[in-house]
Amino acid sequence: MNSRRKFIHHISKGIAFITLANYGLSCKTKTERAFIDQLLPAPIGGGFEMEDYWVWGSSVIKGEDGKYHMFVSRWAKDIGFGKWVTNSEIVRAVSDTPVGPYEFQEVVLPVRGKGYFDGLVTHNPRIIKYQGYYLLYYMGSTYDFKIPETNENIWADNRAQKAWMNKRIGMAYAESVEGPWKRMDKPILEPRPGKWDATITSNPSPVVNEKTGEILLIYKSSTSGLTPPLLLGACKAAEMDGPYSRIHDDPIFNFDTSESNENDVEDPYVWWMDDHYELIMKDRFGHICGERGGGIHALSNDGVNWELASKPLAYSKNILWDNGKKTYQNHFERPSLLIEDGKPTHLFAATGIGPEEWVFEKTWNMVIPLKS
Image (cartoon, rainbow, N blue to C red; front, side, top):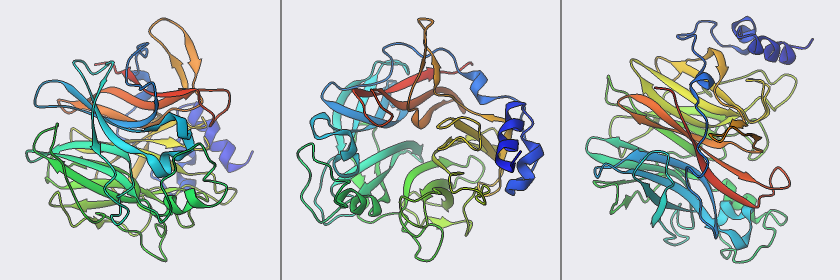
């Protein structure tokens, strides 16, 4: 039995620590609870969708009005799903309850010109509250060709790849959840040539350390573009507008890649829990948590040294709905949590239905309540 299969086998028995040492991680964990065991049935009709748009990753926060505000990516449906990389914009939707359904309100970060790093694309939002401000982190991009307006294949002629390589993390702030939003004119974090994060900075996940007041930001990058593995790094800032400085030169997770580059992760969501950080993230190929596209749960005291939970499976693409039915979703992407009174209460994720893995009829943001 090879080491990768051993790892999956041990996880299924809830004793992942037997093989963790082979992956350069500590065998110590802070909790025996399985995050996935907190998930309740998903409400039919909950979350957010738009008839004429693809919608993808979201982030939800309770506003000063007592309502729940979802910041979410969308782009026109008639130009094709793959145009997220060139046409996405971040919008806001609102609901009286965390479950929804959420109703569209406004475009928050529209096109502002290709001369800006985020001038043509805004995607992957994450919203937090910090010192009286709402901080909206996101991925922005620009490119030197015409904005696609039809359902043409921009991945076939390298245009999509160019836009992908220009992905950078941006931040906007406002005193109200309804804006107006002030956008930073430069990325808050740039790639580092010659390092593991040489290509992009993307998929930001911020959290405030309740002890120090610092902002920890987890981000995604890679050494050579779209080629696996995709890896996660960490930086910190003492002020909301930075500077955001790396707190570790290497990725915060470095899973064994001796047999394959497919031991990689993305889509982190980090939060502060009592006196430490916790994080869920997507296992792209399933070699770590045991399910392709499933979720991993990890914990850390400092944001750099992370340990897998003893029962690391955080969520599954096998979904139980509140009408008693079960489905297998091809995708459960960009997981995020609603945090209230310091605890996660709802899990959100982008999903869809369609005939093939990346061929959709529609997409929406679903929601799963958590046990209190």
